[in-house]
Length: 349
Image 1 (tube, rainbow, N blue to C red):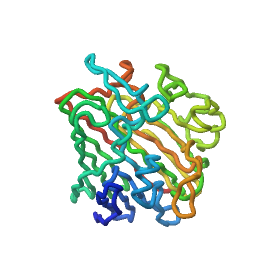
Image 2 (cartoon, rainbow, N blue to C red):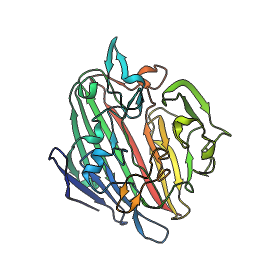
Image 3 (cartoon, helix red, strand yellow):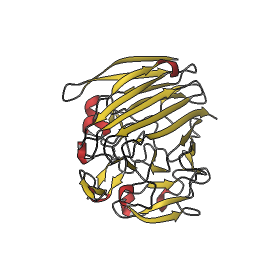
Image 4 (tube, helix red, strand yellow):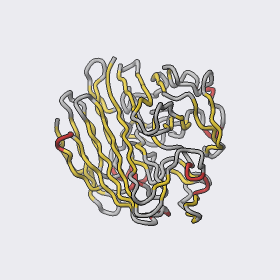
């Protein structure tokens, strides 16, 4: 196992960015940027032993700053959407930036995908610890938030992401990693043949702005049903509501025996490469997104990212939870500790 670092350019404000590479005994490697906590690369073998990066990325910092599809990023303070960018805590109304139609999305104008993190190597675990202090009022969110996120790559071919946060005022918090996966390789074409299973029998009904309306949808027998392995593209044409732009962008309610347990969330298999990925998480939900709004205008070199170029399974709490008391709470108070663990395990078959 090894940990190495090298320069990755500078931000438009002149801050230096570093790329940290974690490598395990089997040759798998993860490259994490201290800018945005981006999982820039995840290199895994196909069935013929060829190592390929399966995390969509950009070649330079300026692209991550300016284009912002959230490729590989840490997302916060609030991943997903908050209706009309407002919520109340203890009778006080807070307003956060509206940046997605009439709603707030992924933390605001400068979310956790746009900050430089402190980095501490975790030699004994083959990982790194990212640290960031979000000041009271940043992007409208109350409380000074102290955050740590660990990326660990072990010899069981697991990429472990651990989150921990504390606050000095009541606030709301919903964190995730927003990697765009393509198990055929980041430049491997569309993901429609990839077989996906989700450990969820329900998802949240949403309005035209993708805000939950407080109803659960039983997915059995519908295009939303991933309870058994099926190619992502098999029923995708059945997603006809215009707000989804011809693909999946749905929050699934994970079937859990116990709240907060680390349990299987999703399994994916790419029949072209033979790569597999299992995702386990302590979170109650997962947003499935199939890159429906990627339009072929950006990419790396001659390769352009097209619609359906990747899929995301974003382990998180539900959208708009601060305004939905019936949902699992995202409210944090002083003295409480936010903890989340999400594990990606890679294999071949």
